[in-house]
Length: 162
Image 1 (cartoon, one colour):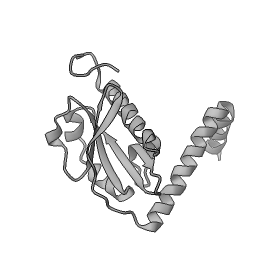
Image 2 (cartoon, one colour):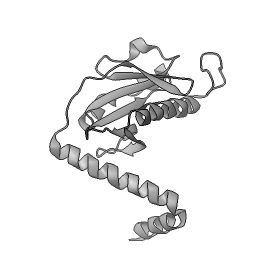
Image 3 (cartoon, helix red, strand yellow):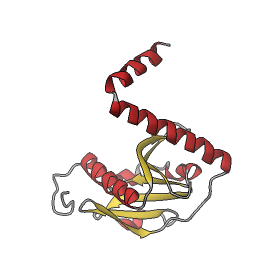
Image 4 (cartoon, helix red, strand yellow):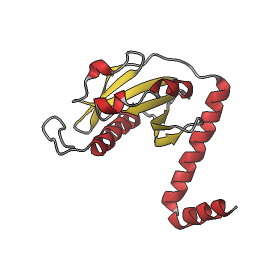
């Protein structure tokens, strides 16, 4: 993974992908099941949504730069869909901008380290059940697309025509 502090040719989308990969690796090494680009019930999308071994959920919001964070005021709304909320950034990010009300992962060299644990705010059982169902359905659909791309395309076309 390129070092962001010495390579000015890295674009914001490339940073986002690299940070998301590092955060995903962090999650998987802790036995969390992670899904990227997870659609939330309110129409927003979580950068990384993780099912934890205890049945809880962690949501990781990836920020590639200060401008990305400052232009996005929706992060407090994510709390309604997780037990633990994290920001994931790279080593160039000005950490003082990030609120103490969320956990903090910092990515470097393809890995992420926990700098601050998040406060816990437990989901209501009914919301947890609904999110678990959504998580399972999305994971199964993505697995189906990987194992049989032709079927997935046909199913998508059939659903759009109904």
